[in-house]
Amino acid sequence: MKIEYITFDCYGTLFDWLYGIKSIIKYLTGKEDLETFFKCEQEEIKQYQPYSQVLRKCLKQVLETHGREYSEIYGRAIILLFAKSPPFPDTIPGLLKIKEKGYKTAIISNTEHQLIKLTLTGLEDLIDKTITAEDTGYYKPNPKAFTRAIELLETNPENIVHVSSYPYYDLEPARKLGIKTILIDRYGYEWSLKARSIEELVSMIIILA
Image 1: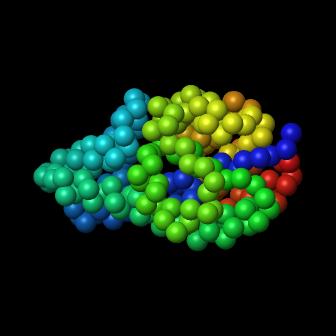
Image 2 (image 1 turned 60 degrees about the vertical axis):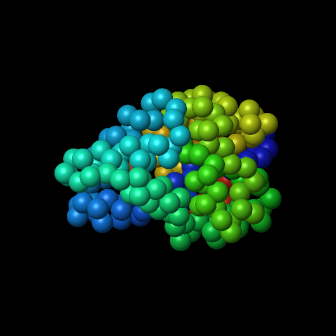
Image 3 (image 1 turned 30 degrees about the horizontal axis):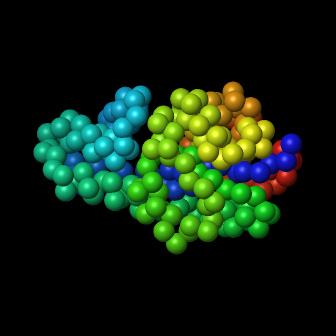
């Protein structure tokens, strides 16, 4: 079957979301307490709620852990910092090459449209479609996040290559549905097909096709 869509996880794969999260937590507490934040996030995404609420709740938990008072100013700050996550250096040249080859691109994200709209400002022409938990009603790794995304893309699993830095949240559930998968090596995870950069994906996609 012909590959129609290259789909991507957004934050942590195309954009460095840790940059903003880490910076606001360190600014407010003096410590880079990502562990408390991520433990909270893993619990909060078990049921759908707007991801901006998840960010607020988990920052509040981090601040309480360190004896600091939460305010809505800080909640708004973490949302904006998250939404302004910078692209990894290989993201833009990689996406340009993928588009040059004629593939459609899409994002399947555990977030919401208001955040991704800010993140993609100026880069909108590089992504053809954006699907978030807002659209599917589920957070990855729930397979329903992917089955609903496939429906919204109006294609078949075998016509998709899904790209992510996260085996647990993305690659494992996608592969079980018959979607081809590639890991971008940002954090040292292992996968059967692994690329060092988005740019390196192009040759791999040709092989999969």
